[in-house]
Amino acid sequence: MPKRKLWPVTFRPKRGEVLYSWIARIGAVYGVSPRDLLPGAVNIYYPSALVQSGDRSVLSALAQSTGVPVKALVKRTLAGSSWRWPQEWWVGGAAPSPQLCPTCLTADLQSGDRVQFLRLQWQCAAMTICPKHGVPLFEACPHCRRINWPICEATGLGRFRFLCGECGSPQEQGAWPEHPTSEAALRLLLAFEAQLLRALQGRSIQWSWIGATPTEFLLLVTDLLWAITRPTDSSTPIICNLQTRSFPLGHRSLPFREPTQWGVASANVRRCVLAAVLAAFGNSRVRSLLQTCPERSGWDKLLSCLSTDNIADLQRRSWRWPPAAHNSLRRAAQPYLAHRRGRALSHDIGKIRF
Ligand SMILES: [Zn+2]
Ligand SMILES: [Zn+2]
Image (cartoon, rainbow, N blue to C red):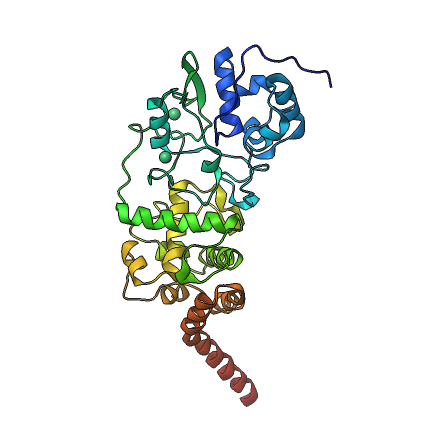
């Protein structure tokens, strides 16, 4: 491969900046799209190369053009990030879609250098609320509702701002609708997401009441995600009965069938699903904050929506969970499974009689 020349103007990425954002900012200096700065072969869906893949040939070409080592560039992508999130927890699934904090983008414009940039951490599907501002994350763009990676505009010497590539709207606060959920509910869900992010990185869980190792916690969450995405005989999906009033679904069904595909869902749908998972194993205070019938146990409510086969399957899976959650589920499942055993027994007796 011929050695590429250094571009005349280049600068280092910001701390926590996703590769796409940095290349878009360099492109803005020259008035071109990030795609125009990539080697010719990357044309199909170029944000994949700049958000997820860490494609070696792309990174080498960018390193030669910018003077920033490949090692530093790979850390700006999901594949090379030190967080090591599993692929099924990447926003957008196979085709990364942008998720933004409007308040971070506003703060960028008011900061000393006035440089707006997109963060890599916003690309984890387990994060739907900004840990810095406690506000919901959104998909770009709020105006035309087309989900597109924003384009970058240079607003002055060394100053940058991101705009919708379709309608030209800014992406920071003021452009976004108010979120109707209470602050206490947002803080609770944010705390849950923080534990989930810790578990995804193999770090210890700070919620001592759950008594879980990171692996146990992650299995509890993923098994509950599995349970609430089960197909049912009725036309109403399970999530419609389990959604909380604090984080309603806002749709008639989920846009994914298996929990491994859940990164394709919007931030709003993921908030709804995570809140339903938390309501299943949380105590009455948690359920009260999420505004879902606090007088009934979350386990009972979940199990009443599942087929007995799925309950039996969930119980088998629960051996890998934190012991307290496993025991609570087993206790709650007893009447449902006893009913099934009773039916099986009467069926057998019926067969003997015939
Ligand atoms: Zn923020
Ligand atoms: Zn737009």
